[in-house]
Length: 282
Image (cartoon, rainbow, N blue to C red; front, top):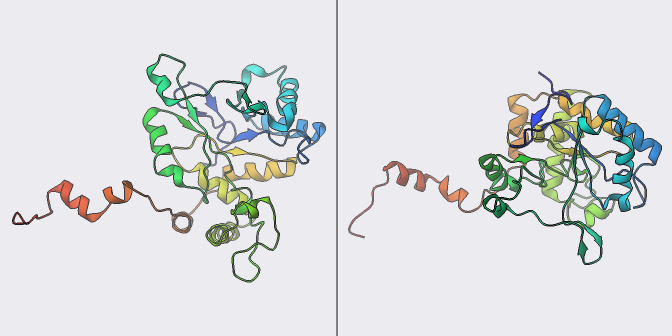
């Protein structure tokens, strides 16, 4: 069955039920030189909430505070039906943080327990699978991934020019090293699967893959226009074949690292099952 924004999921052990896609609001305002004007922001908000969405991610520093100010206006009459997530330790001015840090030892200090974990997670960035996502599942934490489209690398925005993996469109993301041969190869498979599914943009494939991880509560999506938002919401209806999932998993696979690779090795498997024969003379 396809998901909808009102196919709510539990956010960790909080008891809160949230939409399977959270609306990110870093685009709410144009103070950073990009983003949406207030009228367009209102359309984004109304479209998301009108479809049953109830999980909104913001920060006091987004667009110099415009994001939270606009949300305050929009949620004036329906605040009790929405889950708003903001940030701690973001800087309101150089050298000063407006709120205190959350740390996992607080479980043992009697403080309010952490119920969710926000990490970068996508087909391009899967290292959270080594420890963070398993930890979250063990501790009953919701996982709310940001950058599920890898700064739009997975949308097919970037192309090879001479096969070297360099993008023909230089950008901030390319300068950060996100436009690599590995990431472009992942984007190629995303586009292939999108073509097989017909009329499914690559962004929907990348988001749908992230949604399928049982350890993930709700990836955060962002948009500047309602068309972009509707495009992202289409990920809720995407259904993969086993072969398509296998291809996406294979091209984006990561080295599990120590100790995971060791524990998964045949040698350790034989040790734990008693099948390994040890020469007592050595």
